[in-house]
Amino acid sequence: MARQLLDAGDRVRVLAEPEQVDGWPDGVEVVEGSITRPLEHAGVFTGVDGVFLAGAIPATVRDALEIAKGAGVRRIVVLSSHGPEYEETYSPETWFWLAIERAVERSGMGWTHIRPSAVMGAMIEGTYPATGSDWPDTISGERIVREAFLDGGHYPFIHEDDLAAVAVAALRTDDHVGAVVEAVGLPINTRSRVTSIAEAIGRDISAVEVAPEESRATWRRRGWPDSGIDVTLYALQEYGARLTELTRWTLDQRPTVRESTGLPMRGFDDWASENAHLFR
Image (cartoon, rainbow, N blue to C red):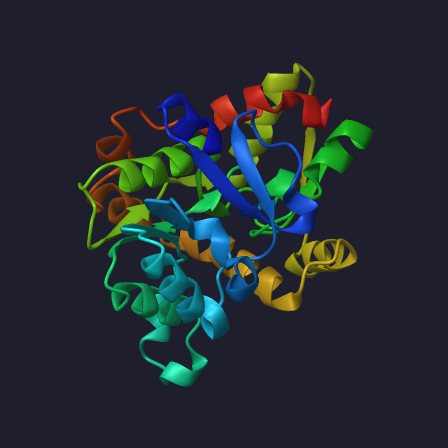
């Protein structure tokens, strides 16, 4: 996203956690800190017109928004999640994503909420979902994938560059002010993801379906919490069982990613080719 903003001629400042301060493109001003402690970094909002809000927490998001508004920020784009629509049925004390969205809506600044699919690069970053997170090791080391719901499982993914392009459009135009944008990709079959990687590296990869509890044990060993594993296994099975319905839901979302960015969406074949080095 930072690269896309720079390419568009914008100045970019990033408030980055200590472990995330390296690797940014030349031209990005990096400030070490945390959006979860905004009072410690009030100056980061000075001279800023728009904020991409990622990583905020309900306990301190209002502080961040008050500082941003006082500094002259006009627009907040929230990296949200598919959760607020479910949280609404519970008491406000239990809200997380919905608490952040509501705080932004009441901030007095222009806002857009982006609720994305999981990004394809999650297996690199070790972020949600757990599916595929061990593949770089097992493919490069053994040329094998062992995972539950290999044939029946599906998961919706979006290329990280497409998600970034949606966020950039929301920051740089008025097209999505006051809107919730579902930045969603189509469900992808688990075995087909393996096939894409095999084609990208030019090697055969054995794919073995295992019981869900075997995948759970693998992901636990890699540090995944049970909550993340539960959601991953549920979604793989649910998207497989309701593939036609959920594919239709994805296609019906407006604006589409292509409408937001003006570009066709990147597929998993593209992602696998770009990241083939991870699996060789």
